[in-house]
Amino acid sequence: MESQKEARTLQEPVARPSGASSSQTPNDKERREGGAVPAAAALGAEADDDSADGLWELPVEPAERRPECTRCSRPQKVCLCPFLPAHPLHISTHLYIIQHPAEVQLKTSISSQYVIRMQPTNRCLSTLECAAVALSILEKNNYIQETLLRPLQALCSFQLQHGAQIRLSKEHLLKNGLYPKPMPKNKRKLRKMELLMNSVKI
Image (cartoon, rainbow, N blue to C red; front, side):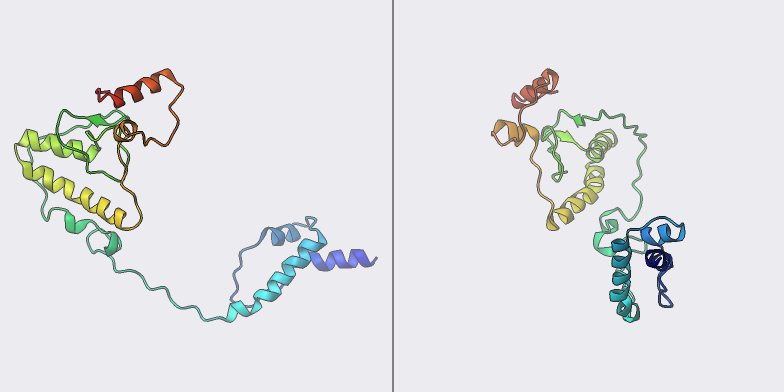
């Protein structure tokens, strides 16, 4: 008889202080739906509620928002707007980018400035870099390349200042015996690695 009375007492919802969160814990939900809750778990939940009673009355300081950019609404600390051109670039070229997932390797002496990401070789450029180089060549205007790459340089610089590491290319790591992973067993992948080591375009 006493065990039935105790079970009834444990199934009753615990009264919360006014202003407390109305979200239900899984135990609250099971109690209300009449699900069985082990006595030890129910007693533990009540003990937690008792120990948290004083927390409801603690003053909450309003969170102070970081200053935001009026142009892009991102926090000013991570905003790239100062590195974008004040006015849109005037170009006559329509550029369509169709790119293989393995990136693009151009016949150029330009090295990728996207140094926080590992590229197959130093001459494999990111999508932005490919677009910048192509537009500069087609429009015969080197200023376009400089302008389009300024946000990428700022992004990499910011991330390097906050813990990112410079990622050397796979080609460099393989040639210098620094590649951290075991060589692949798949013949096609192994062939790609060999081509990288021999500076053959893949």
